[in-house]
Image: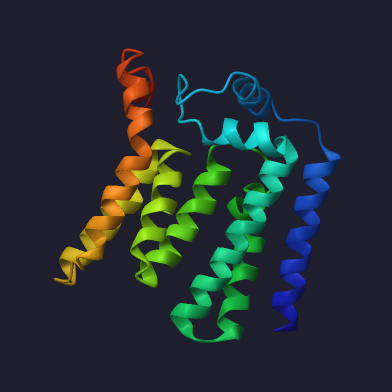
Length: 198
């Protein structure tokens, strides 16, 4: 347990040092420009990172997404393993791997995607269908590959031969959240989708 707490503390320290001690990364300046001109979509990504930067600033977005993802990882592990030790180990592992550290340092579409993906997994595990739909929809508003979370859930449900009725609520809410991005793309020659497919 001590080792886990040390790793979590080191992860937080590294995140803070990198976030507060380095210049803005060039991708972040690109997304900051988006935040100055809010829309439902952009050339290469959905709008969530721009919305968050407009509300929280560049570093605030990164740090809060990283913190929230850590909380979701801890909570999911606690529910799955019913053990605080396991939850702390999961958080320590998340705090020690590069993607876990960097998700709390740079404000890119990956930061909110990881946050909402982790929250979505936690909600799906708890069968909180409305919350799962909202968080999965927010993940889709963060980055297009978030659709893989829904596909993974469907494959797992079909393999288990168990597709709860609430899963349709989740899918419907997620798609409803994402609909404005689809409409924006439709009115902009599908530029965001074309970029992802090329």
